[in-house]
Length: 77
Image (tube, rainbow, N blue to C red; front, side, top):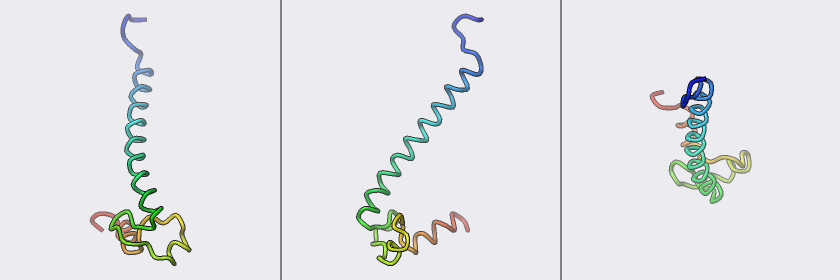
């Protein structure tokens, strides 16, 4: 074994872990914003109230109907 160098598998595992950690940090930031907005019954995109009927049908909704429709279309559609 060479001195001071990691093998390719160990290096790849470290790289994969660093990427996974970064993704988790990004997702955590989004979760915080969503949990605050949805706890208040507000759309995370526009800030308007999410309708009672929508919340009754889908308690986990984080967007109003209009913003959800736009989000589902995605960019450029």
